Length: 202
Image (cartoon, rainbow, N blue to C red; front, side):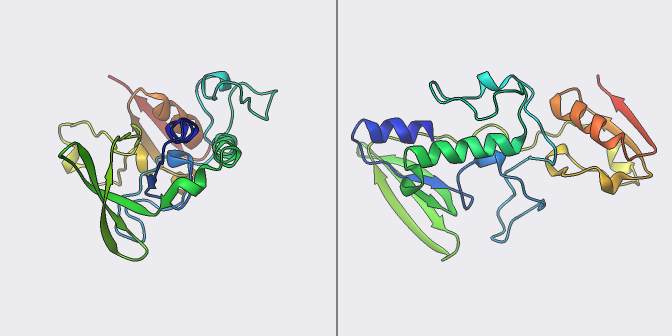
């Protein structure tokens, strides 16, 4: 969104290909996991009741403050609203082609060739551009560590990328492996419902 805003302000034509149906990227919550209606892997790792783990001043555009002036750590809904307001402030949705999957990028004779699939219409098309920004973020592909013996575990297992809410873990014994922010969050959330939660970090 930021790149689109400033490219447009500089008087250049800009097109944004967005995989989902609206702006907001990974901040868009969905109950769905696995793949979406088009067979594309769900890109968001967003779970219910998530709050940012850095002060809100770190996640804002210069000169555009958050509406919530009281709390330092905002909810995911507040961050998504902020991004929507930013897009509306600069009319960025008009630049976006939503539900478009970028299939291939190549360079030929000084131009960028970007092949996309219009998912609702199942149509493939290649566009030509003079410059290219790749802004797909860091959180859409889960990183799974190898754990010796995990293949013999007979219970259910999941990556935090597919976690959405704690209620399904009610009455269960849960092991959470990892030491990142999501592992700490999930330990806190699930412990309110599970019989026992063990947190393991190495």
